[in-house]
Image 1 (cartoon, helix red, strand yellow):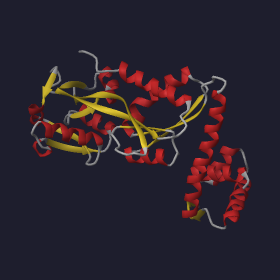
Image 2: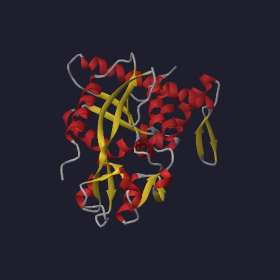
Image 3: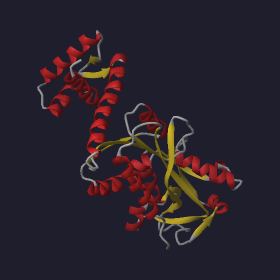
Image 4: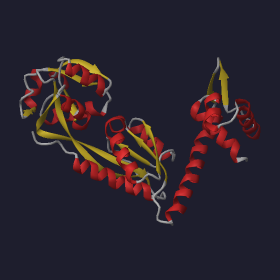
Length: 303
């Protein structure tokens, strides 16, 4: 099979656009279409459905795309492994991360990592914990970083760090000047919570259960689907919420939110996951050490 045909198909499948794939590959659109048709003839199956100026992968196309991801991943792994014989830390490192990590922690970490290892190319995919596990399982990413422990024999699972959960309130809130707040005081003020099924909400439910409380005892005035929307509602004085310290650092510096420790404290762990018996790139070892160091150095400061 011609390698170029697979490369072109892979680009079209990623972009779901012949035009965007042609721009990315510096080819004409007719040339891209020709390469894809050549591959379809080779398989004897359509790889894309084309309707109303939109394309989507067929079942055969989706299967071919999964294998193409693995094939190109092996190419990249081979190149990195050979380069490592010279002592160079380089290559492409593909990471999957859950939302909180991808939005609030990894941009800073990866930016610093890139300065130390400029020859390493980072590719980041965001998904929920189950989605990240699937990306690792299908070799689409080399390393997953998630907010929940995954009990599976298919993966190596390591705790990479943790962050304290805090009670986030508006600076004008009655609790804003408190050093800490006990669980029994949480039912006295309006709450803004994450939607059902979120990891943050489950952490709150577990915390309440440990202190003989239920979600129904809270005065929940809003359930929102993202940390940003929750922070906006808190800043507007509509309620309070438990959040990971790292997600409110910017607002604390700006003075638009205040953070109060919980008594007893509540911590949120993060985990690395990667496949067992898979060749581990030196770049991945370096990144793992980098992330360990970051979480060790960025704890909740004393007030």
